[in-house]
Length: 110
Image (cartoon, rainbow, N blue to C red; front, side):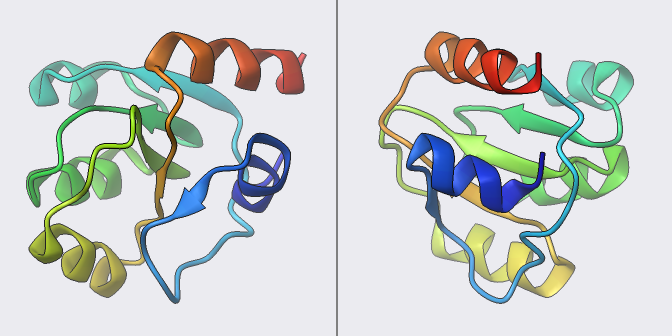
């Protein structure tokens, strides 16, 4: 599945422009403790977090996440959006909660 499929099939909203929506999503990881995410998320994961600070961009790059998903309609900081676009990190937003996002992505992947 591609990041673009998450947008189309789950109605997610891209919060960043000019980013590669053709990245492969091979799994999903949900976590908010950045050091834990750095040591446990895998390349290709769609990472779900409530964090909106610019540090999520660095973590997403480090773990080679396919995208970052911000749940529950949370708005991201402008500095985060700008840094993500500079670094090519896709950030998506949705009104779904983390559980529903995980469940729906699992249904698509399996």
